[in-house]
Length: 96
Image (cartoon, rainbow, N blue to C red):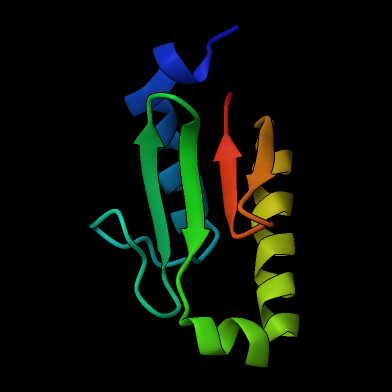
């Protein structure tokens, strides 16, 4: 079984492709812009997936954030990935 440490770049490419194929916009930089996804490999945690929105919108649009997080978790789970939530659900950490 590959770990976050050994699978890094390949796992990141795979996650990016799966989320892109599902219709998400993947931002080219580490940080996501409003409405897009940030996806990057953190060697100590795994592949980080975060949905970008302002702090004000996190509160105002909590239902939408919950729907986006559910969609992300569903896509990753159906692709067979292992992941966990971090920072109160604001990040998903994909480990395999």
